[in-house]
Length: 222
Image (cartoon, rainbow, N blue to C red; front, side, top):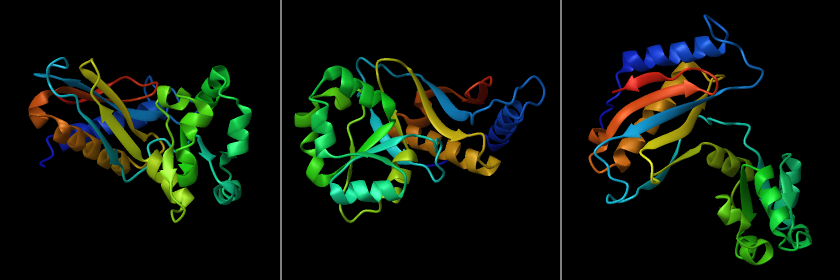
């Protein structure tokens, strides 16, 4: 699929974002790593009538490296998680929550995503109730042969576009500590992937902006 983004405009927008987050001009350097998100307004799209879309895509560079993961694991996986410094919980730990809605909610809030061993994943609804699913954080499966760190990086690097009832979409695609070229590539790939999900592709995209967490939006498509 051809890239409909004007590369000079995108280049300029990324320069402005980087400069602003570094404190240049009227920008301000923050004491945390700002995320760069893409904001998209759709057009000629009727969320009531048109088919809702949903798709995930793995970016080459991880947009949010600080996402917190918890491994709901069997003994081997808990041991592995311990070795690489990842929080983990066993079946016994989950049983202690006693399906208490408040405690499950607290657990879901504490982490950005969960992974579970294949022999655990089926037990999760029984052990925890629907809490993780409601929070949109049902665990990702980690099978016994997979490398845990690789799988964590894959989840951290995967973005999701999902059509809800509104015509605007916001997705984190990069962060200001990345190289300029890495930000550009992630933005281009994310934009092209979204267009591929739409019925009329780029003709369904009205406007597209990129912005850092605290910075002003920069238009890259109209």
